[in-house]
Length: 291
Picture 1 (cartoon, rainbow, N blue to C red):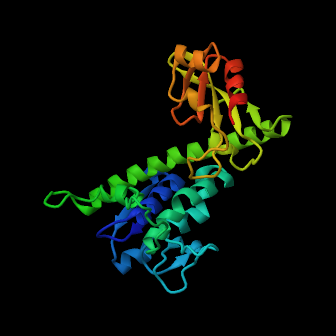
Picture 2 (cartoon, rainbow, N blue to C red; picture 1 turned 180 degrees about the horizontal axis):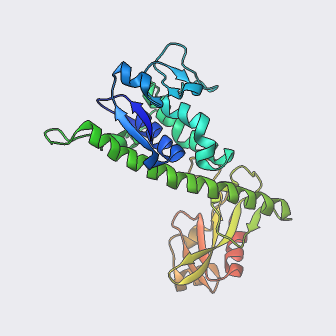
């Protein structure tokens, strides 16, 4: 049994995710977590995160509050979670590509927040996103309750560990999908409309400037259907390279079949980026109509 120490008192995503990562790295049942600032206990611990004032991989020390703590090339300072993930993420995630995905999607956001760096500005709606800090904060004891910070911390760690497991699984699948997407793109003669025999994510094609629509199967309660999906112009935007005819917007079944001339038409999204048909042939006809 190895001992892992982090600070006591209030907690944040940084220390929560650092401990969750060590549970995945070392085995949840193989470590004992203690929350304290007692220097004697810290000195004796096998692992120390987010407390102690030392960053030393060889000694399993991962704090970032001291002068000279490391900073990423993009300017975001490391926090305890990022430091732990930097050294053990690849083993936990199963590959460098999957680990890099977690670093980009979770670690940097957590570390930036812990170091007081804002990553966004609100637009004209002046509505802030609900972030991991809000999610982890919801685990803190409710004022007036009998719950303790230590109990709440471990509940938050359980959540963070499961979130990492799920996100890692999606990242691993994303690596395989990118390989499939790349091979399909290279094999296609007509790059504007690509066909796949497996379900794919349309965001995977944004980097290919000449791909406008992708056709692929999708499992539904009614059986296999085929989707024709327009590719976004960039990540984070709802603007697409092409759209299906406005006359099809929001129509279904017989109405859509009459408007489109596609007998097996099932559905067209009201924003005209998605068309569903019962056959690949029907979806391909729709794809060719997108402008």
